[in-house]
Image (cartoon, rainbow, N blue to C red; front, side, top):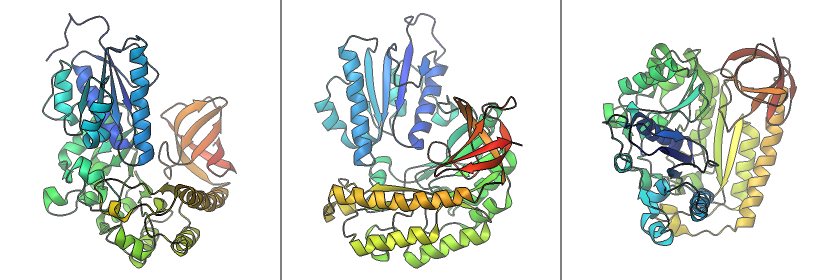
Length: 438
């Protein structure tokens, strides 16, 4: 459907995205379709002058659900105060799980669409749903980096995770389609491609009968034109060796692995249905560091899982102290209806969970400071993300946007957002580096 000329003067749609980078990619593809049909599309939570607001929700853990509900209530409040929003549409993971409950409790919401209903959403807005969402895109991230979704859904059976219930089975995108999208993004100015999925290491098994993450990395490295390629959301069980080799061999693949390990105690890992034990996890970490010199490892851990004793938590603390991850995040366990762990109850109280979160993060802050101090005097290639006050803010290849450390550089006439620059590190903080342009 071509852009119309008789649409009301205010043909604006605002998209508010909550949750992970997979949601960001979904919102960007929806926005691309709508823009093609003549809508003005914005990504701005504070904007109140649009015909329609679409809230892309997250339903992963308790805090994320609460944030999504609050965002919907915020838009309902704006609507009640008579501002420009004529329609509120709720989409995404929370809707997939709790559509009926939300429709009953929030009658002010005009429509609800789950994660597999993008076509119905787009058609409902008098737009045209083209054959594949991947064919259209409007970036909400800064122009120089973008998230590239390589598959949808998940075949893992982690006991605490509701994602397979929400997103369904793992479905890999064809390699050629991913490479074509990557080329288009690079031609539009993207310097850094960040590969995402529910489980990137499973990629290709459903489509090709074998894991093809290594092949995909090779193709993207040699054909996309991207200066940096980064991998998120890898899984420790059956990590493909060819992917490790590709990271090690190609200069434009960041020496960075995001691998949520969740715990180190073998009994808890078994209860979590992770498919690996402590010894296998330690061997994999050793393989990363042996095969990829100077690799940065990022992980996330869960504390307060049912059955986690004080001794188990002490084991986890010693693991963090010993491995010295470059980057680390910690979640307090959140029981999710329909998961295998839900029937185990929630025996660790919230106060104790928070204590464990804080203890782990205190350990990690010391490790992070030590790691950063070791960089003083070294030179790094830095991608500039933005300017804040008297500083330009950038990242090394060892840091992903939004979640990792940053490099602060005093104002310099050669610096521009989205440009690479060589920087010498002069000072280190717990979560930031301070450097000068070489």
